[in-house]
Length: 434
Ligand SMILES: [Zn+2]
Image: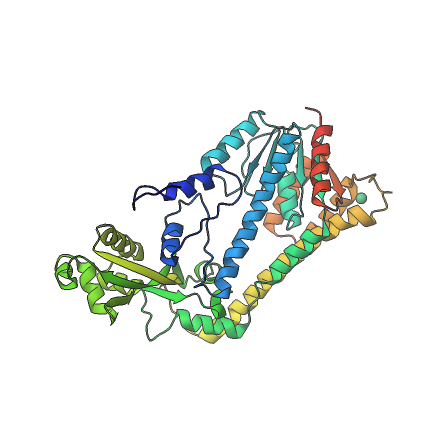
């Protein structure tokens, strides 16, 4: 048991364990406000989330969703541990691992000090290593383009290399349902746009905020409004915007003489039984600073014992760069665009599954294929896929494919359970000559 005063470094106890140990670190806190602070103070290398009684269903399921994605990451750790236990030098690589560890892993791999890197797609962008002997996909890639690009890292030195794909129907169904879950209708989008560009309150150039309500949560502002052809909004970091504040040492009036922020808070707050309730973006706009400046200033006052406060209402924060002339046609445009993006993603996934499934179950192995080696049918089906409506980027990847393909062999297998899958990976690696 550890008893320490405020500021003595209690948070190191869970931050260090989260950094050093594999898996998940669970922190149980007695106060919701404390949890929010703990989450905000986490360094970027430790992704975190909150589960508390004050959350809406949507908020807690969002945390659980992130947790599940984190689980996917720890799958790489599980596999590399299994390999290590079976005398194959392996390390895992994913975005949950600190950058310094990741570059160390990359170095060890490039200098052949470890044989295997078990990685998410984050690994190998611009990897400068020509003697990669095999790429093993232990789950289904989301598109043929992705499959090609990742396999392209093998066989660059002209030695015969293998790209193995361990196919499993469940991953396909899971990925497919995830692609569809983003869908939103025109009514929701229209309502959301009206909230964003609210003419009564939201001024061009000011910091605006929108509480993440269930109705609008499905719609991701970043993709559509920030990155579209016309930039309508500029996104700022998300924030708990509603602040309830109590003064403790100096009287509010005296403190406001010395502190412009406090003066503005007194002017813009609603008072309820001695609490001051205000909206952080409003204060930031009036003082002419950023929301982060306001948060930092509040924290400083708190540490000096002047105030305590609680933050709530997680919100999108943004600045309006341009107001749309016609909201309805913008909503129509976005709805069509979103549904195009969605069906495009699903089509790509279907195409990937179709050719892998064909190789594993339907290929009659009479046209250059044998056993689980399906280089011929895979190459044929991939060329067919790219020849139908090929854009410049796709043409490039076809080019890359034809350069490396003489040295690549495609191997497709169906292991049914995880233990079989991990064993299959182990056997593949063992069968390769060092
Ligand atoms: Zn085949």
